[in-house]
Length: 373
Image 1 (cartoon, rainbow, N blue to C red):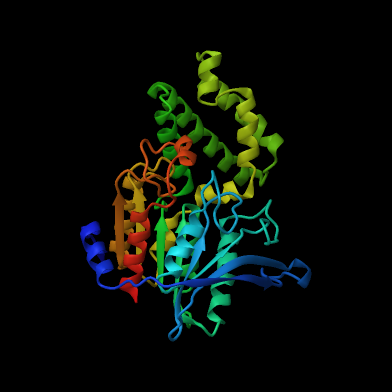
Image 2 (image 1 turned 90 degrees about the vertical axis):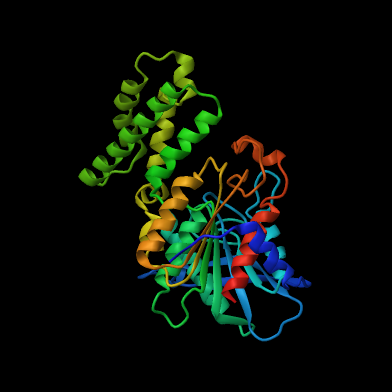
């Protein structure tokens, strides 16, 4: 079922109808995980450290929201460029009656765990432990646990929720900000195209970079399938003739402008050798969205240069419609990947802009959550 609505008018009506704000408290949480993977031993233990925000006035069991960070090593507040988006979201929702759990990523802050070889699927396993933790808390309603994922976290949320299908307490709902509907390969191609164009790079050069990226991705598939090799040295040697071919006829400055130099070649090899990248390129969020046992909210900004909202939201809508997943897809005007009100959407703007995320993002999330209650 696909749901479309005139967001602002509806949201303001609902807000006026009684989303009452209240005070809240915060407590430190440590989730101990022993033998968290199949075949693991007690020596493989790790812990996830985080903050649980709880409304001061608790009547009955609380609905809860788990916040899931985007790609890269993030602390529980998803802190970057002077902003703390998850702190903003947690305080906003806790003041409206929700328990909110936000954790440091593995290997960050108070959390431990192996990072170098971790993939999106490992991060999903970490979130499953967070869900289980909340299900064991007497104050939390195990049937009203929601997941909110930003960027890669949106994919993680879909993976976890899809995996809860058929369990005693499936995830109650998934909310995404800047989430993908396309696989990692297509996301990276679109991201590169949008960012380089925002920087004013000539389209002919942008197309050279994109063509080179496609060939690099194909080369990786061939190398991994043929020999299971993932060393930087092997990839660097394989990438050299590809980059040289696509850089033919370009000046030194042009090569540097779109990353088609020998130095960039090594950088590509390092990046593509990462287990995370190998998984990300082929991971398709649509496969998991199709299996969701719960409603989905997908929020995108029309100036998101990292996960283009138009194509990804339309893909998410179509997948949900095809598989009968209740979906509310909202594209917000002049909003970037961090959910900020912006001018261009460029990454260089992030640190100079206002609150992340903007009030309209918070309002859309609160409105949708209230509809699920």
